[in-house]
Image (cartoon, rainbow, N blue to C red; front, side, top):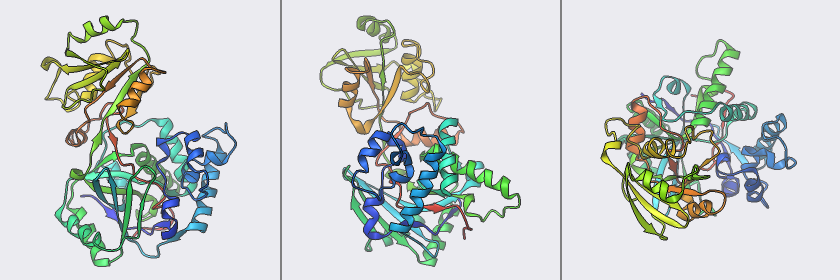
Length: 416
């Protein structure tokens, strides 16, 4: 059963919400963040990417960056935020390109993560964990929510539907065109009903935010060790999340670009591919795959359609049957010699939100070749997590991204 708790949020005052809210720290680099905050001293990027307030060239992992993040968070809380006196839930709706996803903002249990009630589908990197551990520990707060999903519950739906008919607390549209709307759930009976509804849900799944989740858990373990006789009610035993029904979410394609052809000519490459794929020239029109096990390939100004032969598809294996696995195992590793896509500098990954034009741009500038992908299915994600397996790196790209700064979960005190 999933433990889901209301919390006393630190959050922007209504008039400041749109200025405070910011895209997550990991979707932009320092230069882009410096540009994004121009004219906005309230942007949460001053907390999540505090190096932007230090001299250019500052080591991103220096003590100064984490201390600056804490300083900026304290200033933001003083200048633009309020602190709830009673624990509450929140409803967070995002609308992008006409599609809405409505989630419950809450705190979830570190122990559920450790006991695999909160299921994972991705390995984490120690260096990325270390960064967020220091950030969370120094700021003494969860500053960015984890994107969780679950198989639907009518009991949850009925409560959320009641509130979204009311006047929202926040309602604004970002420069990227995403409408963000928030409602507050403060009624104690509804809070208790939501807690009980999630008691009946057997599992939650991390959709996005594996490193943030792992880091929150590592901070909790560190504090448990320091405190020794912790009760389990301390705020650090819980971390910030937004929980969405799985049938409201959409995964976008996560495409690949390669630095070179590994010594092959284009005709040689096509000949190698034809051993395992039906290869069809498409021309100069960008090709977006329309079904599983098909791929687009762009090189030397031309697009090709690749359809995997049945003999290389193992439908009995939830990981091997993924298109990202087929491409990696049958093409990228054997033909291009890239066996570890996590570390090899000859491969890069392009989120579907950037469009196929970005693939063409990369393949004619700093890269040589691009593959367009059919999106991984959410059912595949959940099946892999249920089996205790992990996906290949860069398998899923979720949009819209959850904004940071709308809800802050302090780690001091206790949860109810």
